[in-house]
Image (tube, rainbow, N blue to C red; front, side, top):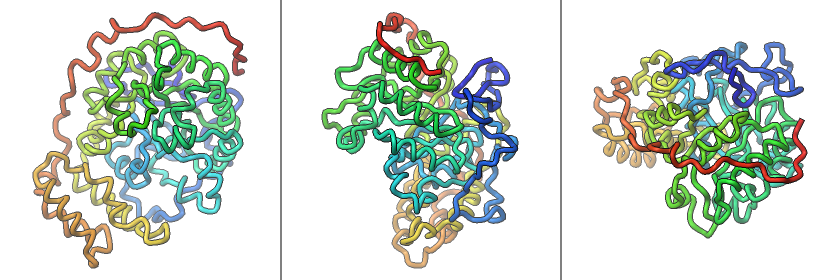
Length: 439
């Protein structure tokens, strides 16, 4: 039986990786989502009631609480993977694992009077992972406790963000990779304050600290000092010399061989690969090569339909939902008009709610005209609802596009993992060091 971050796979992988997760105990923690749990589960207080949102379907049977494994997940992206994006993403894919934007622990602690705005989500979004960032153990502990009642399925610590605001002035994100002892302590603190699995998202190194052995030292120390058994590995190092986050996703070379070497050298841990994987075909290539899971970032946002519409069938082997783009938008409209303006100060507004859809018609006839109409509609005083926005703009999209199902699976690069096994670095040998193993 293969364990994955507090879950056990009920069956072995099939050609479509069609397996189900069954939640189990993690150390002395309570059953993660027992039917008899007395832990309250908040839902977004500003959301519409169940009747209003009844058309937003989900694979999760509340009470049964069984999910497919995180073979495919959408990366946490600041200003992108908000509630609105996650809502439309879940309408399209019932099995993809969704991550929040990174939330600083300090933000959670200092916004206790407005936590719903930052932490609440609809139950349809399960399975969902909260990513937090920070470098203060007390605040990390408090933030974890405050998040508990919202019912996230996993809590992840950001050790990979290279943004100057985070890794520079904030002294967390990827800079934490220089202090694995602190990360181990932070993960122990998180685990001590929650009953759900914990994980770390990191790079393969930063600046001149980019050898495979240094990466292994980080993984070894963190997993030895804490109950962390799941690491999401962005297969590039980070450069903290002032380049932009966008350049940090482009300039450092991808080293997938480091990721696959971790699978060899840490067989008791679970690793998700991230970085440079841009379509479902490439996700399946990584899984065929032995990856435990794959995380996709901007491709899941910029090519929303072309990516997520294939996840359930091509990765999980689930039956197609049969949804068309028009039906997705009809369901999203119900959500959008229910939450419009409910955060206060007229937020979220129409622009906020439409932002996740700008990749929805990527490469389709009418896409550019629709975007121009959208820009104009944002300025119109009579466009006060998502419904009226769609009525004004969707005339640009041919019915054949709106009413079509997911097209053939787009082809990916055939050489993405070519000879990766022949490039593996030498096996890691644990250095002599004092590490108190977590028990």
